[in-house]
Structure formats: C-alpha cells, structure tokens
Image (cartoon, rainbow, N blue to C red; front, side, top):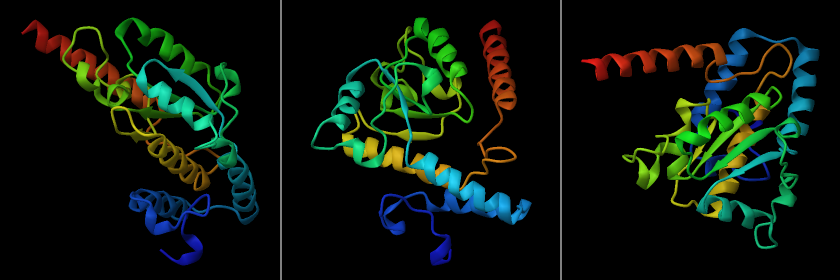
Length: 212
C-alpha cells in the first residue's frame, strides 16, 4: 500500500499494527465500488472527527472492567486520544466496551443496550470471558462469547488484557472508522439481518443435535 494510503492513527507507525491486511481489504472494497469526489472528501472529514472522539458505553462486569477504569487515570490517560467521555447511556455512546463475563441472565439486557445504540455502532470484546467464555467456557451459566449475541468489530484477548492492549484495540477501531463510507452506508463485516439469520440457523442446528 502506498504511503499516502496507509491508514494509521495517533502517530503510531503503520508497520506497528498487526492486521493491516484487513484494513487494506476495506480500502480496496471502497475503491472497487467507487465514490464521488465531494462525498469522499466529506467522508474523510467526518470520519476524522469520529475516529478521534469515540465515546464508549461502559459495560464492565468483572476484572476486565478494572483494567478499563485505569485508562482514565493519569498513567494511561485516554483523554489524550479523545475517548474519555465514557457514557452510562447507550443513546450517547459510539461503541460498547464489553469488559467481562456475560452470563445467560444478562444476555437480554446486553442485547437491549446494543439495540439502543445509535447507528453506526460498534462493539469491542475485551478479555477471554467476552470473547469465548474464558475459564467459565464449559460452565452452565456463562455465554460462550458475545459474537453469538451481537456483531463484534474488535477482539482484545487477555485475562484480563492490560490497559495498553485496550488502548491498542480502540486504536484499531479508530482505524476502521477512518476507512468507512459514512454517506451511503457503513462497511460492516455483516448486516444485522444477516447476523440474525446466522444466529437463527445456529439455534435450529443446536436444537436438532440435542433432539437426536
């Protein structure tokens, strides 16, 4: 990818990111579909503002939440990135920072909060419990990863992940915003209707297996 097309953020070198192929794929997708010059410039301007002022919806349920809280302290200071406006209301947030274990009784509430986020909305799965169930994966009461409940944009592994890893994860989300098309649709991994169809198919398959 040419130097002028390298998508980075917060003065971090392009080579320091580990998933450049995915970002380059999004750029090629936009080029293939074409875009108006004026609309493209407006996209760049709006996405520059959005990527530098991401407001998280706090959804901390266990030890990962303590690591996320430390981002607001002086040592890590997420205010220097424009992320410090952590909201308690989904109607005022840009993305969900899911930090911790999601039990089955919490799933309906979690999904409701996601649905109340304004579009475009994003989700970061933070820690082993949110990604796959973590050490409770085979237990009866913990959801085996939130990607079966909501679409996930960024995964931050760890148990719990360090604050530096959380900063890196939000920076990756910031890069993704920079290559989106704000006018005429946002690039997502899958549409919400497709996601719902996939989950229904998984549920039907699980019921069939249990019946057999």
